[in-house]
Length: 399
Image (cartoon, rainbow, N blue to C red; front, side, top):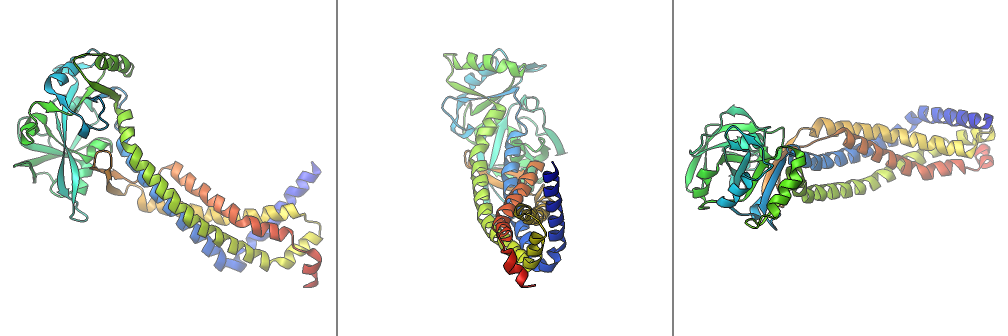
């Protein structure tokens, strides 16, 4: 026990000495801190894009809501359901009912082109035709400007994200859909969900505009309870009149977000790793400079009985402290600059733009700081070993 306490006292004394000596090599120390800060800021910022996209795709999904599409279709764009099929689905046992009938909305999903506000270039924007129960099936919809569209009229409401990202979606303006002009009468939110990237209108009005007849692409149904899903699914998939697949809403949205989030996460990690290699060399340079400037002091301490292992640990702790300062600085910068920043990107599975906000979560901040700590430990290891192996006699002769 006495030996352990002595070892800890040595580590503490050496670490305090090292930290007080940082000012002597402040230039290289500052370079290492800001280099690591830059790496962490980039890592957290890029990963916050993936986090924000995933959040937008999944936040509004309810396990009590089912999506029914044609069997074999991966997205609504690839699906197709006839009007009679949608009635069978809506009347199926397990679908919740409201005062006006089953809470099931047969929906049409088309893509229109609108210019981005930031660049003026055209982008694919989803236009969704819905039925009356849609607002109850998705009970998070809230009109924040204007009003809902009137059924049977060429009117639309725009999601808040779409209204920010694309031109022509201000309340009172008009957009061209097919051969007709449609008036924007409201803006809605859905707790930051995917619907905020869409434009909504009456499906019965949208069908003739695109010559879709009595056809839809999916049915969104609110079930009596989340536990009713499996029976509802089995009932529809075994009905000989139907050829459908049934998914929970969160599962469908999670599948839709996989490709983009994996791509962004992979690229972000690769870029940060390459930058991290440069930061490791910066930390190596800083710690080698620190060890070189303290050759005599380290040798004197070794001659006084300080062990090699405490020297290694103290140098590593110094490198770790510098890395944590840089990591905290970079994480804080990423949070201030990027958290809540709004952007839009294409969902490669539906080929439509998705508006979302960067989401710098506590988990991402911690991940960035841990990455900085790893850089500091790797960058400080070789200089720490060199410090422990300094020839005591040769160093003392320089005094």
